[in-house]
Length: 59
Image (cartoon, rainbow, N blue to C red; front, side, top):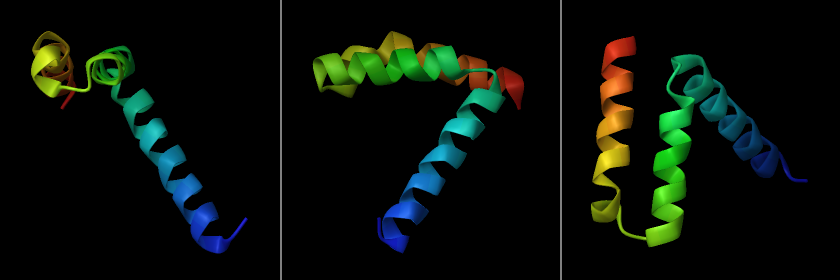
């Protein structure tokens, strides 16, 4: 694995860690699942609102 690939992997781990630490991981993953299923953010407005509400509450 190249150093660039290792760096990217570490960044992804930091990203996941931040999401999990936020207390809003379940909303984040629900939003990601919705987008993966529909490939259109406009069809995920409920999931987006839920994630935003949680994230703002945790600030």
